[in-house]
Amino acid sequence: MSATDRPELVRSIGRWGLTALVINGIIGSSIYGLPSTVSATLGAAAPWAWAAAALLIGVIPACFAEVASRFRDAGGPYLYVRQTFGPYAGLQTGWMAYLARLTASASNANLFVIYLGEFAPGMTGGMRNAVVLTVLLGGLCAVNSRGVGEGSKVSGLLASAKLGIFLASIVSAAVGVTLLAAMSRRVVPPVAA
Image: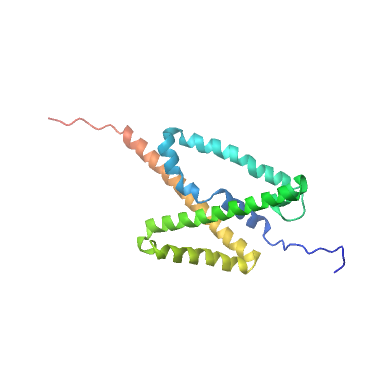
């Protein structure tokens, strides 16, 4: 290897793998945990609040895409800030991004255990929570340690599952609203004396 050759990252994710990563980043576990809280707080205005939040949040990935297109090296926010504002700001940004991802992962795993407890109460509670979390996170670590390609496949499966559940929820809600509207329009004949 000459002095000018630099090792390159293996680029094996591909377009659909990257799409799955973006979907998994956007559709987090809170999409299944927050709607009831938002609906209870905002009532009929909740769908409008979700739409407004989606538009506002959509600006962030657009900014990241624009900035990322200007760099060839890997590094994400750390790289962008380091190149723009210097190494100290880059270090702060790198640590903040790391801590944000760490707490988000912990939150997602915890919400998974809470939901699992609703569907299979015997699998959670006390020490069983630690076992479930160890199996969940250990399994994901094992897959990722096998390589980027394997992790990308699992990410695709998880994104498909999330989208499937999300779309099934939307369809079932639409069917429920339609049936409820049809039932409310039905005229009940008067009872004959």
